[in-house]
Image (cartoon, rainbow, N blue to C red; front, side, top):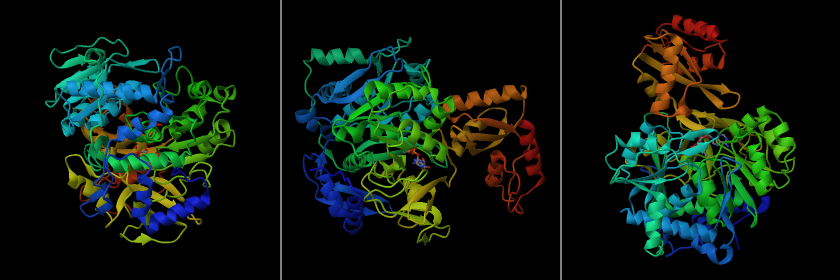
Length: 637
Ligand code: 6R9
């Protein structure tokens, strides 16, 4: 018996049941997992504090659900297929049995290095199998992992390590991405200058990049493994965790301040990612599933690692980038490993589309049965190309809408079960109660309406808090609308009741599917010694979805181009290359209201190239500022 729903009628029934009796609904689903002790109460919550508890009283370990429980039936089934950056290098396969052995072994390494339940561990690794091993080893002993994406700078890592007071960092000498080598350990060394809490760094060998190993602090992964072998490879039984014990922290950008550490807990996250993985992708026993995300983002956590593994799936992970050695790489991987399910991002689709069909046309993609999209709204052109060129017109596309804070997919068609429309995330999954709210805090009923997207009722995978600052969690997500979780997204509900996400309604940008706060970029730009003030907005970008447009007031101590390059360097150093503005326009003033607020609405319009009408500008302190910026923008084109 499985909890997979295979018909639209069954979906409707499940949805209805989840509305009428959510506790019974989720209780039945949770029965499909392995518990050391069963829960006593399915759900206790209020959205005011917020205080959200799923499956209280339950005892479990997520790695027993992802590994141990599959060993008897699926021990020799590939759990992870790893495709390296360089197609000439051999790929690797780890069966469930092998993965479990490696996870136990590395869990012992963690213990040998003084890591215990509740300790925080920062993981800064490239997309290699050891990233999965390290992540699961943390979960095995109840240490809380905080995976930091390999594209973030030393300063960003330091901020994240300090916020969570991590005791240990796991990294590698370097990582391969296309024809670049990322010097991960050297970046970690720069970060650690500012971090007091870190006692130990474990360094995996990957690129043979020279690194400085600091006596008493840094040890090699391989040496640590040898030590465990000398110990006779002791087993590492899974730590007994409470349902609500934190599993991991993942930092994400908001509209204000520094990134916040979203906290996910054990049982609810496990149940939700497993349930949604199985249902959205309609995973069948022998299918090969390939999610192209990086494990440094939530999509990788939930849908490369935890969701697929808890369901005994074969999860393919890829170290490199879609355009290396050429723009046919994804399709080579599909052909080589006979991928059945491909889950990727609109930005990747658009970029590959632009290279032309010759990279696709000669590839055998006949194994593809189902497709998924995530991270940002997908435009119709990309949807059709994906459907026709990759899915050959008969692979359903699941456009999955969700967020880091959600843990798993909230609104999406179930592949081949639900109807699809290009650009629509369609219908909420069972257990998810979306609603649209107006500016005055009232729910907008009925169809063919647009509003701010909220969720009315808890689902097991939702965030519980933001690390070290519960009030920030309350303010950001639960204060805008009473008794609701506010997503920050705008949404249209069609005549038929289908949901279409229209994009963020706050100051969060979505650049190539990566979330970046405008305030974060502004803070970084303002750190440059020549910068007086700046304002950052998004604008439509043909490949990235959104590009970053920065208006900057600066004193030039170099020529304009020099200052621009210096600003880009500053942002790269402080956040990472992903936050670099695409366009910098120097301005002498910013459009401000009499009370000193920047009118971003106007700056957004200029960045979009739409200067026909700026709406009501009567509150502007000096309207002539706008004309000057428009002239400057036009001169720059
Ligand atoms: C999973 C993930 C979340 C934000 C979210 C929304 C946008 C994600 C989308 C989508 C339209 C989709 N987003 N999926 N917009 N259609 N299918 O991406 O999490 O990095 O936290 O980003 O991404 O704006 O609010 P995260």
